[in-house]
Image (tube, rainbow, N blue to C red):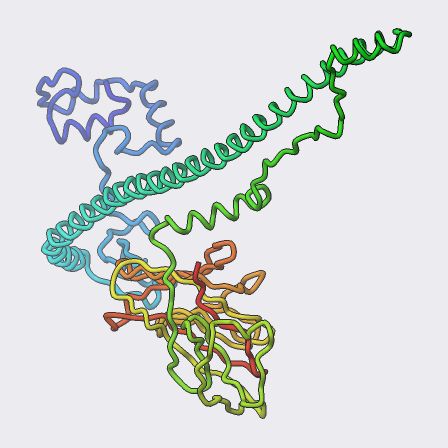
Length: 448
């Protein structure tokens, strides 16, 4: 039973059968005799008011082929807004200046584009699958690399722990050895003094009894027979402890650190510097980069023995903004082609050295007038640090093409640059200085 005759009539016109039992109905008169189901009618009206559409009631999609605003057939496709519109919508202000296409033409055009896109989907999917696999491999490689590093770190710390534990045992054994030696000597003296004390006490009692003898002959006779020896306290002295470790008592950590340097590998690169231009002097040991001195200039006492004799070269100076500047640059005789390398440069006293660069050629960290930055072919990166380092640590990783800078005093990381753009197959350390006051403070490669 349907809610009202129009519903039933529409159904019978399309199917010519009862919607309930599916029996054939030949005549429309039978429809007229059916009564309206007002309860079902009320529910249908309520569903309309609450906005329940045909798609929700029947489970079939509702075809939106009519413009809801103008009740006109949707015949156009607005390319700009990407929506179906009617003829009246096209002339509305909100679609002014838009591009339009007939629905069939728009559908055909879109299908053509979709078909063209399908040709690329297979290639894109293949490329994406390749990228997904590559990313998975990178994740796995990262995990393996992490495990490798963790094992490597554990092994190196184990080696350090073994060294420290061995050295700790050796120092403690030395303490125990000195303790035992001291205790043996002290115990021997203690036993001797204890025996003398006991003998002195016994003699004290005998002496008192001798004093009670009034007869001189008997006194002497008894004393001679006793044959006692009076003990003198001056014959004995307390044995002092000789337990002493010297600087290991107060500077143990520093001294052990120095000992560790002898067994630690790899170590810092011991750079040997060489001049690359006028204006600088290199010490005979190749460690220090100094200002070239006038003949009338004298070495300060603190530097007379620094590095031995100095090779002399003409002073390099030029004027900038009316001020005389001194400077020059140098490189290391050490060259690096592969592997990992670390070295340290003492950059001197900041107040006297107005400008310096250290690193490798074209990849440097620079100090200029109080400002710190890194410079490489990719560009200049300003750096902000609370304190300008007095010693720069430089780590070159040839395999990963990275150059890292550290404050070598506390090993704080400063910055890392890429060296992938370097065309040179081998490189060396690079140093450059520039200053206004003739500077004789060493610009030194650190050796430990």
